[in-house]
Length: 401
Picture: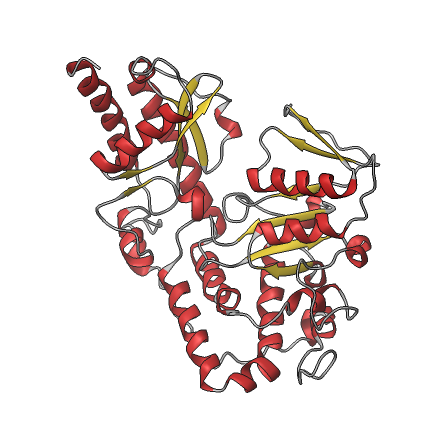
């Protein structure tokens, strides 16, 4: 039963509701009908699920004219999820006080419990946040850094996180050491480990109880395909007393989840729309989705490396839903210097001349394309990319460039 716990909210007993065992928890009734995820139209004669173009048309808003191979950047939201988010926005505005004062926190508890079950952790160890950056800021800014402390990052650490670490070091005297990543990575008992799993949710089976990290963040808007503005932060139970949200509000002192559930008035529709996104994943099953993604990744890299006579910068088994593929020699020969500018030139040509959205990367004097694979993609997308790259090099050669 919802009741007051912190602030002036009439239903803020978040910690209590999250702590209840499943057999004693009764979720609040959603005030409208959620979209139904029906699979019958997406099975072949053998009963197997069909992904690709038809899924793209029915479940995504992606333009037909665009060959979209950059899902890893900002994701692409499911249409039913967006519909649900809009319904929550409309419902909230029908009676704002009722929604924010009496209903939103029990609703957030419900979806938090479902998300915790999906990633296999205790509901009290997971907090919904708007993006991975907020979660990482919350953790790193909560620790009591002193001069001489070492923050270890890697050469592949996300740029925004590198900037945050440098900012913390400039204020506290802590030292940032950057290492070239070597696999496999082994942890040390005296080191706290914060995992930036921004791309993990949806692309990999995520079992937090088995992984047992100190801290873990992941986005929901990327491979999980939720509306923008949904992510989660996991903190190991014995460390939760140290971690404060990046924005402190009414829940301070009332428990880890209470502190994160309310960081000021906000639009919570992206969190609440996770019900529909979870329904989608449960209907199609995570194993079927990931099997399609990983097989298509193998097929796509095989097509491109053979067509371009190039290779991957790492073993195929190290790639999941994204992969780097070296561009053909003829593309490299177009430039005196292979750098960011060269990569940008190729990327813009693909975008403007071929309607292909895909990033080109410059690494150690070589150019690579970073392809993403999701259920709205199919092999013909990557065949188009392969042909376009050959056309670019031939056109430049013909023009004497």
